[in-house]
Image 1 (spheres, rainbow, N blue to C red):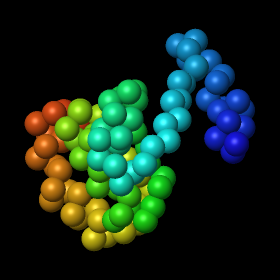
Image 2: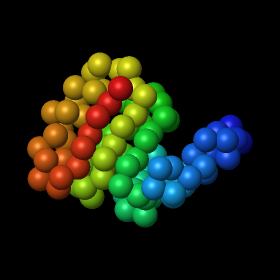
Image 3: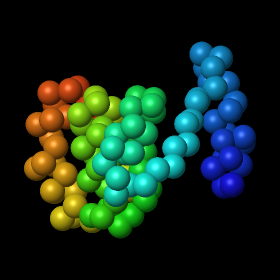
Image 4: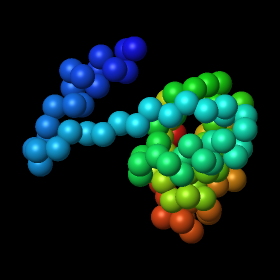
Length: 103
């Protein structure tokens, strides 16, 4: 896959500390809140989402990250979605030391 090629070329190379950046690719049904929560729980500290349209597929991921204290970012350019996620989950993210940042 494209991700595997990028990983092999760039991210598997040791960084300044001599360690490779570890990327865990997780696939789950984004409409299933529990499946998303389980996937986010097994992830590292940062979750990057590229599955849109985000107004349909983003809220469960944002909610799980906010509740589980993960850093989250996506590539959304949907203003209504971004505002809704801010309104719904910013306070939850702050309580759990999570970072929610849409593009």
